[in-house]
Length: 231
Image 1: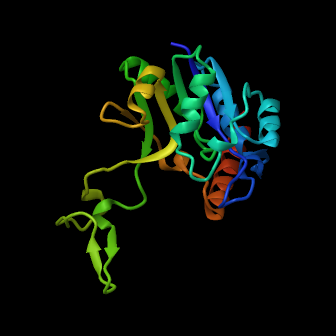
Image 2: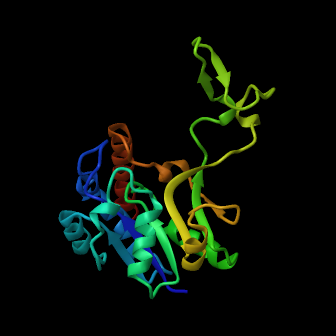
């Protein structure tokens, strides 16, 4: 099964301006994902989908392919996340499956990518997504009523300690694998057929805010230092 990694990176970003090409821990943000994908076995190509010339240039210099430029209509704030993926599949019809890698997950590494691909292959699954434990368990999340009081999001449980709660997992946005025909048929990245690949929370950080950026940069620098010391 021919599989390509797709890294979507539009030029516009609201929370952090030009974040895809902004330097974090010594490299443009998108380069961390490109390099992890290039080191992975099981991928036949690493492709960046962008509407932005600077991002395309950075991606090519890092070793990724930019075989097409994304239409502006598919690079808007309200563009559905699936639209650029389907567009890429139309442009790259020689592939059987796609591995979507968001550049805002720079701590996701090669072992995660290869483990996700292996899970899909061994279970013959049309879809695998990465998940991790959320910061807060849904049993401890509340709505505010119009009177300013708390209303439980889910029915209250007679549990007072986090370790006594049943584990729950949230999509972390780092990895989505899908076979082409399944994705075109379902028009979804997640269905009841989707398998979960569980990631450590530290590697699942999604860079969306300045605070996320600071945390990710700290962890990336720590990882780089550790790797240098281990050589």
